[in-house]
Length: 328
Image (cartoon, one colour):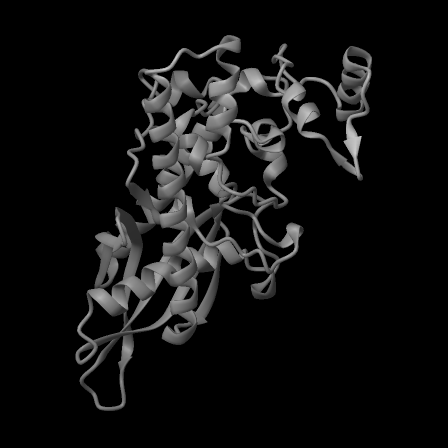
C-alpha cells in the first residue's frame, strides 16, 4: 500500500529514465505467475488471484500500470537482486533458474515460462548417501497488508506458484536417481525494514500434481478464449460493423473467461470491465443497475425482468451506456 502522504509520486523521475514498455504479451506464451490456480474451493476472502479475466485483458486490451504499481515491482526487483547476490556470494546455490517448455493438448500448442528465484542444496543427503536433496526458494516482497501473520495464513497463491515450479523441475528436469526436491520455502521480506520470515512446506509430488493439472488446464482455457477472440475479430474485418461497432463488441465479449471473484478484485484496474462482462471501457456502465432498469422501462414500456432474471432485451440495452469519466 502507498504511504499516507499528500506528496505527489515522482517515481518516474528517480527510477525510470524514460517511460517503461512492459512486456508485450504474445498469445500462446504464458508465464506461471500470471495464470496460477483458481482455488474455487476457497472462500472469496481466502484467495488473492490471479484471475484469468485480468490476464485475458492484459493480452487483448491492456491498461497501463500506474506509478504505484510500477514502484511496487521495482522495489520487489531490488530486494530480489540483493538477496540473490548475497546467496550467490556465500553458499552453493542456483539463482534465477529459467523454465520453458512447450505443451500440446489436441489442436492447441502453448509455451509456458517460469523462473525459480533460488535453489539451495540441503546439508543432509538422503539415507543412501547418494541422492542430493534441494530446496526451492521463492522470494516475496510484502507490505504490512500482505505479510502473513503465520504459516496458517499463507496465501495459497504463493504456495501454488513455487509448487508448480517444483513439480516441473522434479518431473521434467531433475534425474531422480541423483537429486530430489525435499521442500519449498517461501521467504517474505517486508519492504520497510527488511524483516524476513520463512515458511517451509515439505514437497509432496502427489499433491503437487493436482496443482499442476489445474494450472496447465487454465493455460489451455485462456489460450482457447484468446484465439476465439482473434478469430471473431478477424471475421468482423470482412463485415460491416453496424450500430457503432456494438454488435461486434457484444460477440467479442463472449470470449471472456469465467469471472473468478476474490478479495483483491477491488484493487484490479479491470474491475469494472469484469463486473459488466465487457472487454472495452466504452461499454462499462456508469449508472447503477437500478438506474438502468428505470431507464429501460421508461424507454421501452417493458419490465426488465422475466421469472426473476433480466431479459435478453434488457441485457442488450445495458451496452448502450458509455463511459463518462472515472466511475470511482
